[in-house]
Structures are given as structure tokens and as C-alpha cells.
Amino acid sequence: MEALGRLLNPIQLADNKYINLKDGAGVTFLCYLAAAAGDTYTLTEAKTAGGGSAQVLATITRYHTCTGDGTDTWTLRTQAAASTVVTAAAATQNAMVVEVDGVELSAGYKYLKLASTGAGAVTAVLRDLTSGRAPANLPALGV
Image 1 (cartoon, rainbow, N blue to C red):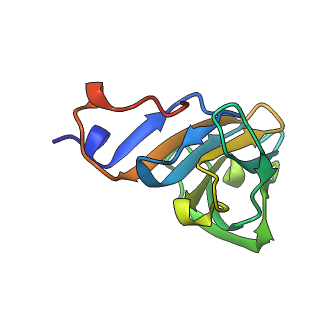
Image 2 (image 1 turned 135 degrees about the vertical axis):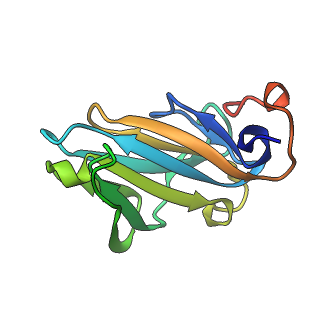
């Protein structure tokens, strides 16, 4: 069985879109913005796909950055628990990855989104799926 459907279910265009965590253990967010700008990404949780009872989720303490073009390795960056990640206007921070486990969500919350305040691209990968399925049978993650 392929990884798609067994281990992961991605949404390539996930900037500012809620992801339903009910079928996975967590979400890995893959972000990219060219070095000229840097960006701020904000993590929010909600009770519904439409953003009901939305609130920022201040659990990000670790993330990784690199150029995103395969010429360098990932650099671990740490911070005090926050709902935001700020990348610098430097080539070594063009790409950013942050992981959020489902257990980090508040009680009653099951939707999560990461929003770029700039023009950063965000891909969300629901990971460690609770049950394997053929890719065609994976549920839509935004409902």
C-alpha cells in the first residue's frame, strides 16, 4: 500500500484552511516563501470546519527551516510556546516545517489551520492516519 492513504493525506493549498484531525494523529505544515520577505504563520484551532469558536493555539515550541531547494539541511529553531512562527528574510529560512499533534488541541476542538500573513505557500499533511484506505477513499479534510 502507498504512503498516501496509509500514512498521510495532504492538502497542497492549505493556507488559512481548517484541517479536520479526526482521522490522524497530527498535521505537518510545509511552508515556503522566497527569501526577499520572510513571513509570519499563525496557528488557530476551531470546533467546526467553518471556524466556530476559533482561537489561536499557542503550542509551537519547535520548527525547522532551510532554503527549500535541497542544497542544505534543516535547522531546528526553538521558541517559547506561541501561536506564531516568524521566518526571517533569509534564504536559509525560505522553507519552514512545523508539526502539531492532535493532543495539543483544546478539549472539544478538532480543526486546525496555519495562516500566512504574507504570500507564503502552506501545505498541510495529515499524518499517522488512524485507518489505512485507498487514496480514492480518503475523506475530504476540510469537512
